[in-house]
Length: 449
Ligand SMILES: [Zn+2]
Image (cartoon, rainbow, N blue to C red; front, side):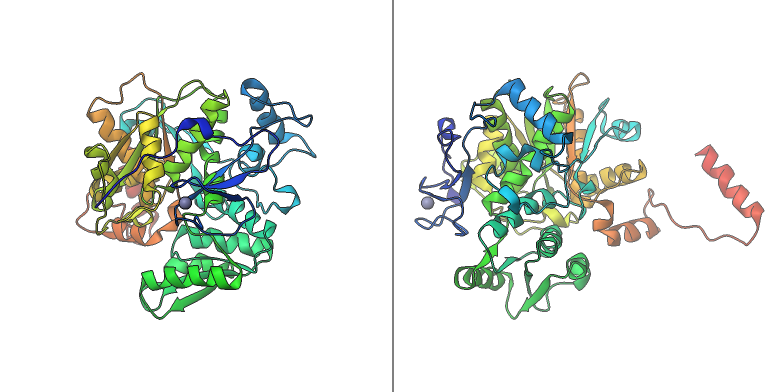
């Protein structure tokens, strides 16, 4: 347990107009050049964040409010200047000087869905579901990775690397293949089920099974990045945060910049909570919105150090031994803690936790609505249901819940849950006689249900 520190004030959101972007240490405020490949602050080891110049038009005139919205709208569809990507149409707030280096599938442009069945489950009319599972590799990580791999191209990296077994390594592998740069994924030998890495293997990343534990992997990947010119794309990479900001920018654009009352998201390593906070801070400063939604970060009860911190007004930074079915948020010591604290404070936000049973209930409702998501994603909808029950979310409130990953990210849990004999909501396969009357009988039952 260590004391938390307050982050920088709000008056240094941008560098001078016309300047190149810089990377700035969130702790000691040292700045380094935007093309520096250092994975952390070279002075104090703190986390880096990206600071851009305010957006301008082709003549160098500052763009704010409606003019900036109009630039984003034009970028959306006009050729040859536009971009089919839901990340790069916001380029002036992501990586203004990327030039011709952009590595894009494209990604983003994920839908805002409403489903009556999910409304009924959560107790909200018109609950908007921002489904990031519709990205090319099936998770929101593509938004950060298009920015991260683009940065790798800009700095001439010899390879890109991360230490991850899940959605990050899949996104890294896919974008590295697209860029023609070797992708390396470091995992502890003998501790990882290869099934979790199937997508990564398919996309052609080199999987290095390190003889040692996960901490040893992290150290090795950092040493390799320093000594061999490998660009590190772990969760603390500041350019990934820039890409992830576009989840918020895109959903606000889809809502006509009409700000919802609550924006609810799953929370593990807190990268998204931090990115959402930065996006909202910049959107407010640039006149894109005139108020922020309340951010609600939802953790799994078995991996809820941030919820514990919220309960004591962030007086301490907690770590826990994480245990939950929601593997994508099974994090005991979140990397982006300080940035996420700032995001929650600035938006009058909240942090809560839901049990695995509550998360699974939400997942089953989302899946059965034909939408589907991975278990961690369902934490957001489980959180909405909880806030409706406590009266915090009321019938007139407008709510957006973010789903972070596709239903096929975790097929194992689907097979397990729906074949479980003791589970009332299981949708078990039914063995029948080879006879049309048997089908008719099932159909009659389905019609009554
Ligand atoms: Zn520093």
